[in-house]
Image (cartoon, rainbow, N blue to C red; front, top):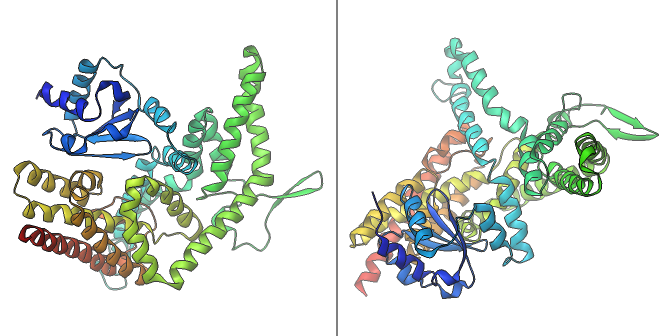
Length: 467
């Protein structure tokens, strides 16, 4: 299906004209612009265009939601109209980064590191959920697991568990690959660095508190603990930064003819020693302190913690700051084996979907009704941006209703100590990644975010029409 050229021209005009566009690219569903001046954007005119399902600004980029498949054709038509050269996502990010403050740049850096590895983490979480169904006691049979009753399924569950746990077992390698690449170094060295930090010769981090004597290296009188960093985030992040900067520095100083022989060995050797002597012990202690503090806060005031995090997560998505909490989730899983934050994220997704679905019954305009229905389904499956930016934020009462529902649901499941052993698929399938013993409480939380946002959005929608 071809796109209407005039509609594309209206998009260009609405974002301030081609002279206001520094660069443009697209992702699966959105056009991404680096603009000279975002104040020139005419949001009302933009959102009135049939092709546009919503728009928002985040991390220095102005993004226009078009939809999967169609966005490719709109982008190509826009390039033909404006005469702009096709830009890569990285070029847009680099251009947009020039307008960010230090905090926004830090958040963007974390997002750039963790978003590329998210598919592996989410896949692992989903597979862990399947393993939970097979091995969780009391789900199908009283006090027994499915594999207890049907032992022929035991090895099947064992293979699933092995596949599922791989991403978390070698998490430092995934982070090392992504982080070193983000910091400008060689991704392959990042993988080696991550694997080095979880080498089998090291004491497994999950066994750290269970052994009486920790093995050590004696380095010229200096005792260094032989401890791995399984499931840890901070150690590999800092070590990756050191490795990338050291590699870049060596490349500037070593002649091209000798770089293959010298750069990687020196960079890895120096970073390895620094990691085990300084970076690892210091960041491990910091990470442990952060984890203990977060756990203590939510244990001391679970209702308040759930209300705040459950309610604030959706607004954090608008700013892009939600990506920082993926690192916290992974750190909690690495330190305690579970996370109580991610289940609230799943409920927040459902709440946005419920508010968008209610707008289907509130709105009369066919385009917006259709948008509400399709984006609600997307949010129920864990992808909330179309519902948030295309519908709920456009009608603020819908967004506020979703926040209220999410806060109440978050408070309830936090009070019930609902835990997830992994980060998984958000939305309605999220129960698969919840510990089976918490399913009952999580389903009640799901009922809260299905009913409350829907009812409040309908109510406020009727009130607005009555005025």
